[in-house]
Length: 119
Image (cartoon, rainbow, N blue to C red; front, top):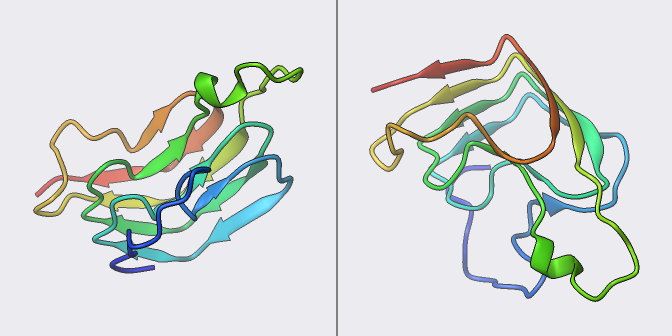
C-alpha cells in the first residue's frame, strides 16, 4: 500500500488498525510513504506480519498498541495483541525520523530477522 490516504478520518482510528480479530496474516507487501496505513494491530488481535518492506514510514513502521481511553467505562479489560513479526525490512526515507522504532508501543511481539536500514 503506497501513499495511503488520510482523507477519511474515523472515530475508531485508521483503516489499517485491527481490533479483536484472530489469525491475521500480513505477508509480502510494500508499504511506502505512509503515515497511518502501515500494519497496526490493536487489542485482542493475533496474527503475523511477515516478509514486508516498509519504506519512508512517518509515524510508525509497525504498530502494536491499544489506547486505554478507548476502553474507559467498558466492562472489558483489554488484552495486548499477540503478533509474530518476522523477516520484514524497514527502510528510512526523507519523512522517517532517525529514532523511529521498527515495532512500536505495547503488545506481545515475537520479533525475528527484522531488518532496519538508515539513509
